[in-house]
Amino acid sequence: MTPEVPVTPASLPAASLTALQEAAAAAGLLVSSSASWPDTDEDGDVTALAGFIESNFSPLMAQVAGMALRDRELPPASGTVTAVVTVTALGDVTSAIRVASAVDAGERVSPLQFFQSVPNAVAGYVAAQWQLTGPVVCVSGTAAGLDMAALLIEDGDADEALVVRVDLAMTDGGDRDHAAAVLVTRPTDRAALDRINPEGEQ
Amino acid sequence: MTDQARRGTGTVVVTGTAVLSAYGRGAEALLAGVLSGRPAFAPVQRFDAGARRVRVAAAMPGSPELLAELTSAVREACEDAGLSASDRARSPLFLAVHGDPAIARTAGGPAGGPDAFTATVAGRAGLAEQDFRCYMSACVAASTAIADAAAMIARGHADRVVVAGGYLVERDQFALFDAGRVFAGDGQVRPFSAGRRGLLLGDGVGAVVVESQESARARRAPPLARVAGWGRAGDAYHPCQPHPEGLGLARAVSAALRRAGIAAADLGYINAHGSGTGQSDPAEANALRLALGDAVETVPVSSTKSLHGQSLEASGVLELIVTLLSVRKGMLPVNAGFLGPDDRCRLNLVLGEALPATPEYAMSLNAAFGGANTALVVGLS
Image (cartoon, rainbow over all chains, first blue to last red; front, side):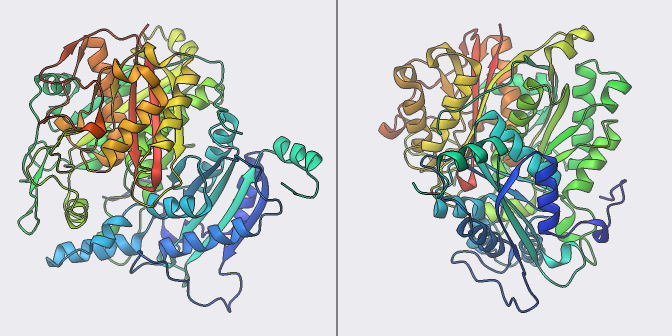
């Protein structure tokens, strides 16, 4: 398949926190917590994640999601429903290439590759770990991801959304994997929460 | 902060559809196929599946190409809806696919990607060049896209969205599912049945034109159905397994009923997710019992995955079209492959042959890895 619309690797934006924050603002959302990786040049390897193999995609998603959720200013009110929105330009292209190579070579495909074959899997891992009971979705664009988060909140299927963008190194021709996450909510909810509960006590 | 499902005030309608399945191209082939009750599963011919444990799928003959089939489906749905070229140019595409199918084998590194793939389909079908989206959330990708489109239209954020989804049985996903040992070794999908062995993949490409009632009226386009309600919720339970009690799916069902403004007993048909796997079917039955209450005893249920197979990202749009075609025909498709009851999956299944019925409301359910669940309610009145 040769795309008629020329989207070259170089024009695909890397997972930058700034892009997520700008898209959140454009969608009318308030960022209550955020994280990105790598934060500094000293950030080493991504922490491995049990059950996920051969690719940084899922470990990276879980890592920045955890960083953003740990850093939230206020603990979530009881019963808060949080959506998990994964945004990625190419998905887990490392795993996809690995599987394709094995298939083409007639080699065995690892059953663990099946369990990480869609971005939902690690989103489900994050949801289970942090008890995020909102919708689990994955789209390819940052603006779409934040617009969707705003819609889910407006529609009442979620009170807040964790939006995580993950791009593996080859996505943008850069030399490092990147990920960023924002926890977003409606400005009105946040203002109300601050008034009722200024110290963030439950 | 639970039970907050809200919807905009606008009425959302479907005005056009197009579909491809293992039964062939077009709605007539699909409807005839599912109402025949004869599953479309057969040994895979499209590629060499010789190294796999299970070598069966529901695939149409030959090697249809995803980009071409999606483009055709989107064009046909737009024609079915009577959209002019300028109508189309203002309509964004929400596309549900696994990704750019070429990405894993592009020499020298990826060059396209899901957004480029989506833009290409939109461009070739004459849809809007902006605001397209690619949904990649596995088996709820298309149903989530339809829910989002409906929510946006009900709230006046959009007048019309074309939603399409596509999966054509191919070697990589086939190898992955085989490695995961989830295929039915007996070559049949038997949802909610004793002795069920697992799922089988199937071709599915579908497109629907979703728009506001005002927009349809302005074009004098007769609605095929209303998208009355929708719900999406997560299990927060496991990367790949559903919550055993079906908690997330139950919440999605309740939200969809609430948005539709109907009671569970108003549902005349449920097209279940019904993957035919050991864990998923009881979880879904529990979800329906939880969300529907006593109505679970009476609402007819079938999983047409027993007929056309599991078409992954396209499932939501394929099965919504199956639901629409069936209820408009007044015949509910059978839950094929049934061997006998499983006490953990007690539902009012459509068994034996298609059931004559003219429901006013029907629901289509989907669930996916990550504990993602969706429910869509269509209204026929």
